[in-house]
Length: 180
Image (tube, rainbow, N blue to C red; front, side):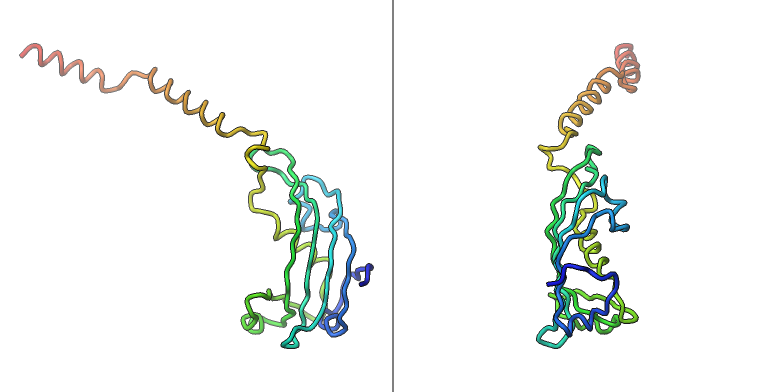
């Protein structure tokens, strides 16, 4: 396996040669991932294996491991997500070819026989981030049950303190019934 990852390469050629790359890339070097992180510190370990499958399709196996610092959407504090993601991508030149792929392969659209290899790693990490990352409830600083219970108690006290707007009508009705 090669440890030096080129910036751009022809994935079909790499698959024909059976090349594989493994190593680490700094999270700070992944610009599309950066807005999702609270800190760009750390590394992502990766393995990119290029090969041809039984149908002679060029296929890329992507394996990525990283620890991402994300913002918990419940308490807004930093949380850590351990990512161990992998996928198998078939190199395709258009949507028609992508439609014919078996379910176990995802399409990898390549234009002009050129692909930024680092983008494969970045894509895998971005796909691993949940839409609303949150700590497990027991580890989160925001105690929603306590907060929701106190709001419900305040609402009940507030409702009890307010006079019923129909109480005046009920009094008028009882006064009218007593005069009859």
